[in-house]
Image (cartoon, rainbow, N blue to C red; front, top):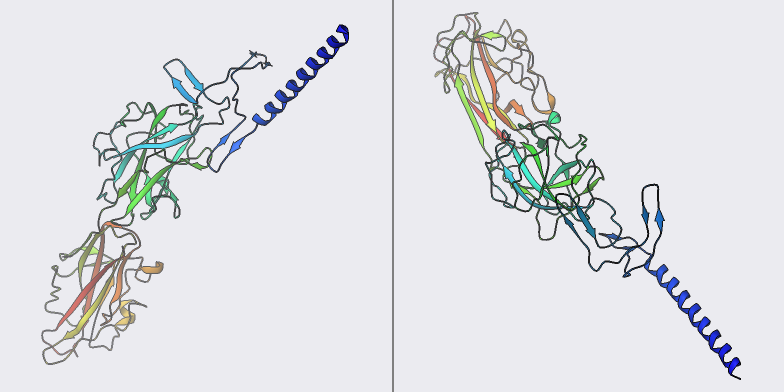
Length: 440
């Protein structure tokens, strides 16, 4: 009787042991899974407090692992301790503190446009500035050969109209923002940290398409620098900038509580002046015969059958994003107090022609103008040849154009007159006006 009972007891113990073993295997399978969302992936998390795992290679043997109670990373000069889940997918930086500087000729800039994380205002066109930005890694994995470029938008969330900062060699005058040429070379190492949250230096960047062999340190807040030039951005507008990982083709997201770097461009400006040109000046294929002022073109006493030429100079500066147009019109023809007039040449602004074509040998008198701007709107080159003249019109006609902001454009206007013996003598006067239209 006692022996039979012992046998039943041993069988029961074996059944229990088998059941526990099967349960352990099932739990292990459930935990070996990935947890995902739209923002992250946790791969094969290990929740156990210990276990035996054997893994080998030619260089190491792993005999076991221990679970961890919390994620995190610690580092020093000689080590990095990566804790938490035992799978690190790759370099995952976040955008943190930033500051703008205005002295691109210093390797470590000192002239700040505003405080840390504060948007500077009134940033002028054609200004080369530096951006210092901290990129904090979240995983403890280094960013090997990681090239960071810069993008901009008028939308603070980069939901639309996102553009790369343009390479410096391809700046068109209205590219908005281009990489600038500072004292540093692209990919040069920085020497000094300036931001309060950075822990590691990285590189100066003057290109978004170059390659780099620099590794951004894992688990560190790396300070990076970009040199950019304002190139005709819209006036009085806020622009936002974000770092973009060119190596993985992904934008670098904001860290918690952080903001994207931003600037406010300068307000609109326009300078338009007219100045006289002295006699004897060679311009646009002629030599001037008289002195002019900003307000007068005093032809004086004219000789029959002789061409008399004069000039004025137009000077234009504007930060208008899409440049400007200048128009000229005549309030009245050259008129004598008696009502007699000197006729204009017959060629027009839309179709200018040579002086001989527009001033017939049978005419008692002719006068007209030539503009020194060789390229007008829509790429028209109708005044590009020197000997092209048009009549003044009561309707404003285009005489100068630019599609981009300008800093000191110069256009010479030529005025020409000729009278024959049939023209009634006396004092003739006219009045011409200019209109300039900037396109902001």
